[in-house]
Image (cartoon, rainbow, N blue to C red; front, side, top):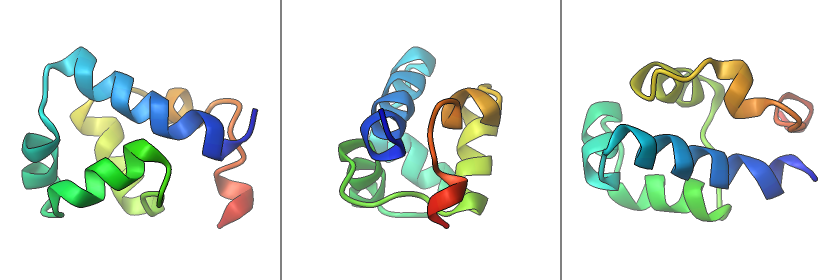
Length: 75
């Protein structure tokens, strides 16, 4: 499985586990709700800065979000 297969679902699962709506996460990151949706649907991907912030918001180690993904290879 590649980054594009796994990261979107991992982001969505982490958000749901924390009980956040897409809008709540967007507000915390100061991005649009559509950005969160796009990341979770695999239409785009967060940059490393936002990925790091998501890790903190979700209380999820960055390694867990990118594990078995080729995210850094795609940068």
